[in-house]
Length: 387
Image (cartoon, rainbow, N blue to C red):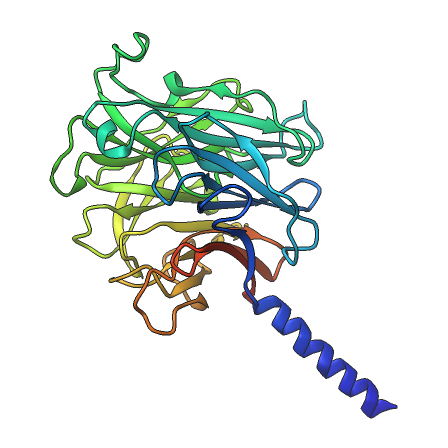
């Protein structure tokens, strides 16, 4: 009997380990009316369910065109996923860059409220950079764990500085911002310290006409301290070409923003540190450990500590192509990355096998990774035991 029980335990353990390491398809290109799915984002809803968002691209893989924000839900920690739900639709034009976050500090919504920030656009990025188009910033909310969503709220005038008087006379700022995009990936809410409750959304913009090596781009962020009633625009990162960004809460009220280097001269991530909750940036530097092929990355606080928060970072850890998706763990607020786990990679190294990703904390020992896989054929989910 003891031997039988031991055998059963071993088999269960093997099954358990396998279930934590297999890749589960969530969005498969060519299904549910969309030829392509890209730009994943994921959060845990107040009721514990996982909500996976992405761009559903109707006509193909291109960034611009008929693009909706879609969502699926998992009630069993990512093992299975429910029906596809359209959350944001801008008609034949683009609704993209989903940046969800859960607000758990609003006394008006004691059960929690989900914010979904996103962008709309009426022309492709290259034309918007030339001044021939407009990108706007919106959000929706849900108070029932993503089942239904509020009407959209336009916050462009508060967090963007476009000079587009012909398209909209109210958009006439001297800064002349043109292209604009949230994150990609989740936004964050401060859990501790002076800025507890603040919702911060990492973003980027281009300024003026297109410049060589994409130096017209800069990363920035915006935030709200009153649960979406008003928004404030943070300072831009002082590094030309800083682009798609992700952020995480550090210890002692600090904020880290981690950005893509669109110039591509240094194949590593740009790290910026703020001591005032993302209003300004004290320093920016390249983290040479976080190599990057000019791609997207995801940053997440997985444990809050008084001295040093534990952070997780995920990206395609390669300098040539989008592949070798790697999860890294830092025990000292991102100064060093002591642990690393290969989430997924190709066997031949010839295609963009793993690209954009986003992270969600599932438990004390488990992190969920939602990521683009197999040359953008699908967006998959994998749970990783990090300790």
